[in-house]
Length: 213
Image 1 (cartoon, rainbow, N blue to C red):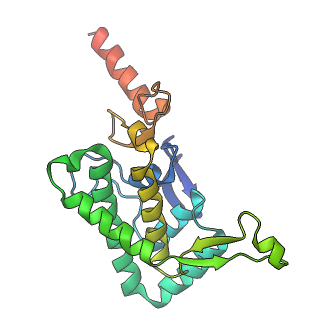
Image 2: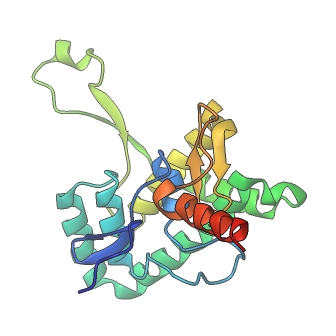
């Protein structure tokens, strides 16, 4: 197999983009090659529900054990898995529009994102974590919110993280790469490209070619 471009990596047999967004939600919207249109991407990396699960594991949102169990579930319910993937890709489009301000002229994308977030929030369960005693239950972290481990969980988890991003101060620091349209956090105001090794380098090459004509 030929070497992969510098912005890609092989994870459990699946080619995926390397995380460059500094936030899992931004890395999620960066799982397609470009954002010039809302239509199909020139290159799509979430090509199956299993690839979506493997991506979740790669960015630390799902444990390898959870991925294995969900892959088994998907194998037994392929139609539902395909439906969940379609919903995920639709959410990604609407979320990108909201994060980049494309949705300012219409409430459609925001309302679509909000519906997914609200549905995910309604599925959370408040549960105890494993603790040795009643006193330990009072300790910080002794109870938590959890989502059911079913085929809806990966998208639900991303939706809840997206809600935190959109409702918090980090949204103001989301930037769009001028080369490919990928998103990243730029809290210091010093970053221009998704990656200097890819879009940044291409821009340098184009600028050099223009100067030497």
